[in-house]
Length: 560
Image (tube, rainbow, N blue to C red; front, side):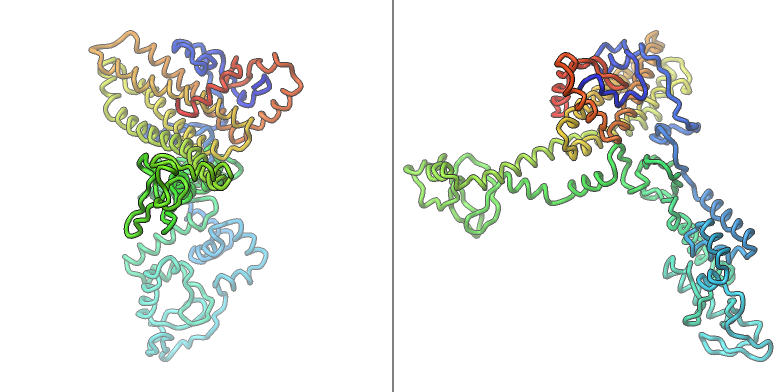
């Protein structure tokens, strides 16, 4: 790429970082100025067990515990109750109807209060009159009761306490539909409020009701979603106005708030959905079958050739014998047709073009399968490495830090740079994993060449950081006492962590931007001389790299 390729130059990483990603000496890491860019957010003092949460470049969400959700819910109910001068039970009915949007409740209420009351079932006047004396007949069991034994909603329809208890218990056990419960009288619009559930529901039923009530605050709220981790009861409140949907829960689960799949920057949700479907679909199985088998000429079942001989015999009950090359009956073959390891019939027919279409189709399937396998293996490999890094981080926190603190006579609070390095490795493995899904669907050749170069540089840098924290740390864990080299190791690991973080952040930005600067640089290259094409690349990724590095990235991408 030419000197215009400065798309990742948002943060100039300095000569030390250039040497780092150029495969320079390990000692060059400390040439970097080490300055951290202020991204405009405040990092909270969180525990290391939060894993990826502290490594997001922009905090645009809040993790909510159950008590936080309940507090926000009660605040909204109290606000609506106070502004509209209605009871909290009526405010709850309104908010449930308008999906917990306080602004929507206020707008609709002040625009047409009477229409809203009718729509949600908060009636100002009873629909039927109830006598103050004499016996009253329950609308469900049709037994007679004194007026003080009858309970009615705002509509005035009379029901006894026993029937109310049964009605409410049945609807609660039917599921969350109890939140929108109406009067037992058919076609009556009056809503049943929380006060009725408090009065007639059993303790067990109340617990169910309030669980539904709490969950509705998240599930009906456009700004909130539950964490998808099994057993996790935390919710995420997301701030609109940003394209970064990756969030991390307190349970350590990182996921995309938009599609609820695992966090997948720099790949968009549509590409992730395509990739997941491809990984789970039968299409790749069919490609393998097409590329590595042929149908039996008689029963049409696919057969894989697992020996050198061209004489094939189908499995029982078919048992048809045929030639693997020309698919004709083996009885028509012999020494004159080429014997067991050749087929003159096939060769002559192939020269006449009779097998061109089938061979072409089989070759295309084979190439497609090999390409998919290339990307999938590396995608899965980085996922495995990430899982191993998570385990190593946990082991470091539980065992190694305490041991290292004793050996090096250093407080554990001063060893956080080790856990920070592991956290960065975990995050970078995730990013690197999804770059392979990105590369699989990247069609443009010019962009693909540059993308593979950037991907190869990222892999090289990450491996260096991984090696430092995984291998070099062991020397200090097995030492008999404090080592003079430990401070040098601290500085080195801190520098590598910072450099790798900056590189990957810039890589993510470039990929999310669609490698747009490649188009600009390609257009500029057509008007430049041959010498200008070998000029240095600017920005925060690479410097002083010629076209030979592009070829190197291709080798890296192939895993060699």
